[in-house]
Length: 207
Image 1 (cartoon, helix red, strand yellow):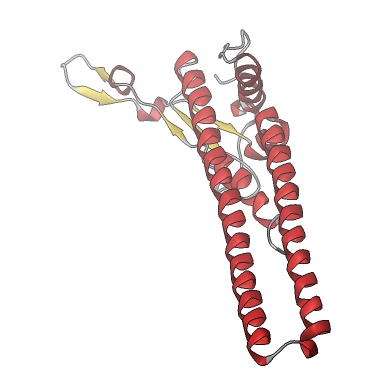
Image 2 (cartoon, rainbow, N blue to C red; image 1 turned 135 degrees about the vertical axis):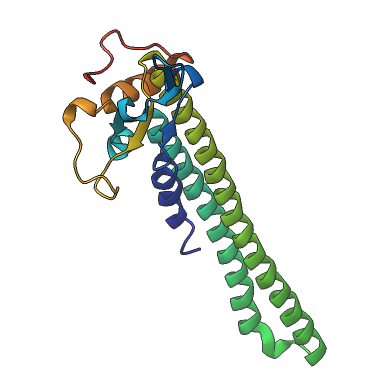
């Protein structure tokens, strides 16, 4: 099962990349001028960013889930190898004793070995699918946790847009005063540890 451990690297990188959050309440989006007409306040929107690489490196939930998946992968890999070795032993035994079998007996053993080989392949695929399902579930949980914390943070601090910022993003420059990464990481870890969200007293340097 050569690729059993390889799929572990996908979800944690992809899921955290979905940190985009947009929040415009109707009151915040519009103001009324002297003549009573609505004026869009998008030019005054507060925009901050989160470095997703730092979140991946420092969010305890990710570390724990990655260790959990790696442990399960090793366990399933061992189970697969044990079955494969058992089948190999049966094949070796057949080769050593085939000369003592009749043609009908040999054909029956070969058919049985072929069926077991096919079942082993299906078993391998089932293990891969099981891990993929676990990763998809964790990815959804991760998205929900991050979205919840970022949305709460945005509401508490009158922030309108939170974007993902790292080396691979489309943002070429962002002022350090717009960086709320440490606050978000703290909130995520506090929630993961205590099951609650607490907004830091000194939340952000955004002006």
